[in-house]
Picture 1: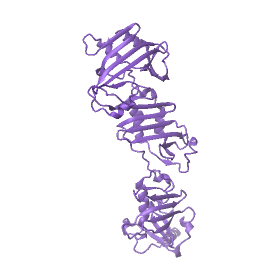
Picture 2: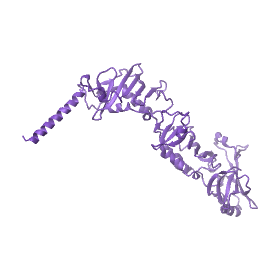
Picture 3: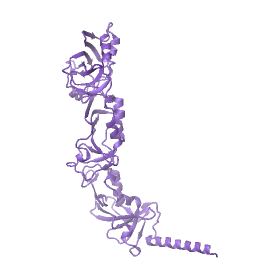
Picture 4: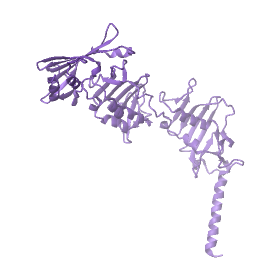
Length: 469
């Protein structure tokens, strides 16, 4: 036998000795399959013989000091010292079930133990106190993973042996507060909104349901909204607003909570004392999503608060930054006149020495000019300005009649400017006045019903259409 062969044999023997020594320290309990796949067949480190027994509280002293408690009446879990934070109930239940009936895959006897610090069961261990519904309590220490990564070392208070528990159960004992969070926003039906309100920087937008979109619709349509905030009286461009502002909220999730933040003193630190973005959406079922967004941190998250909840969360910054960067002028339909032809009974144009009345469905009506009036679109959105001191160059009055059928009475609460009046026969009459003031040499400023101007339109376009009537 040559020297090379002898050397290989000696190395193989040494390896076998090391492997044997390693498994000997584990002292696998007879009858326990190290690689057992069916946990029901394994012995229990924590066993509950009564099937009615439940975990009612857990305290994970793992560096995060997490206290979980189960509400007896509702059965829902919450942070015992941070009431109100919404938790993912499945995540909490999974952690609770992990220790309710805890199997082990092997153990190390006291005689073969190398010292608790070797297994991570002193410094750095998770000390888990578990309270059960039968009044009993267990304290479980969870330490390092085994070298092969399949198990965690664990020790039950009052027992001398170190046991091996499934790595998934052990990992849950090291969860932080964020791991238990419900990451979903409060439910809201974004395709059936009833009220829309949001503030971006200094612009505040409030949209309420507008009038019907045509004579075939005799009810208030929640897919049409008119602004009562910035852009007063202007109609929301539904396709753009939902595509660029509201639908992206479907991708917004909560990914953390600032557990030690004090909302009474820390709002300014997180940019939430004067938030740059606020949004309040209400759907037809009365569900409300109302939130505020503050600064972005170094991790690419925005600080975030839900109205009525005294907690500061974090959410990915991308969606909120996108909403803030949207060109707000595109939120509004560019059409000036927000009443379509089939709803109008009378159209009057005054100015430049003219006083003309157009009536639809009359033989001698100038249908071309009539259609042009309802095709007017503004050129640019401007900050609201008071043009009441400027004389009117052109005035456009539109009167119409809407049949009452399935009118939602609550919506009539919004009628505060005389735009709609309810007649004695139950029908609804409307009149709206658009005034074109001199803005500069190129544009007129448009105001509705004597309100503030929020958009401008080319002088040439208006003069050409109105002057041709």
